[in-house]
Length: 263
View 1 (cartoon, rainbow, N blue to C red):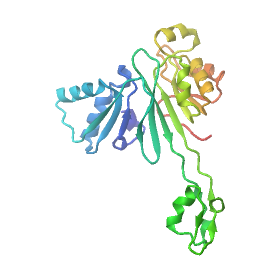
View 2: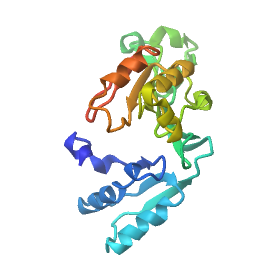
View 3: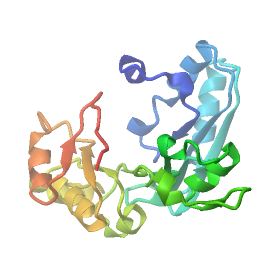
View 4: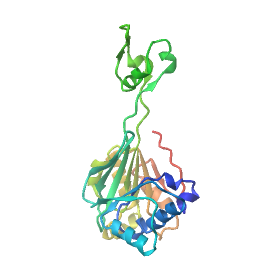
């Protein structure tokens, strides 16, 4: 319902990442899958999550007499690995362990290095053909048939920045995650509590806003997003203020918020 409310086309979703098996992180999954089916989906969906998730989802679909018109591939995760889950020519998705009451997976979505940007005006009249362009975009000089050299620095600009997004759902303060998320463009880190409830955070394997900011600072990320706030707080301003005292570039997120990723 939230995806549709904010104009996200759910049929464009081909990969879903589930961090762990606490209900607020997966109870809506079967409803989403059912809606995809009712709207005519016929292409494969891949779901990455705890190993038990497949039996949970398939049992609910079977009990509900829901025969899907598309296939689902489940990729089991165990909350104790750092490995690549998906890769294509544009992005790479990896998982890493978090520190929660049950096995929990963090995720890092990273854009691959982009090609250099071609200067069309500079290329005119050079004799460069389409087959030369991939080399120039990779930063490789090319030699034309007439023997003339085209130097990539003369006809291209450096590539646009590649962005990365680290997602740390439910987790206690755990500095070991810094090695996995170091230098990320954006870090989402749970901040269930503020510091006056630090003991409660520790007991429930959650984090405070200050602890999330410390992780962002140690990992040298560009921007910190705080979320997963306890219902005991009327608004998120207290979380943002606490985190900002440690890490300046911080946002307390709300549903539907658009984030500017620029450096």
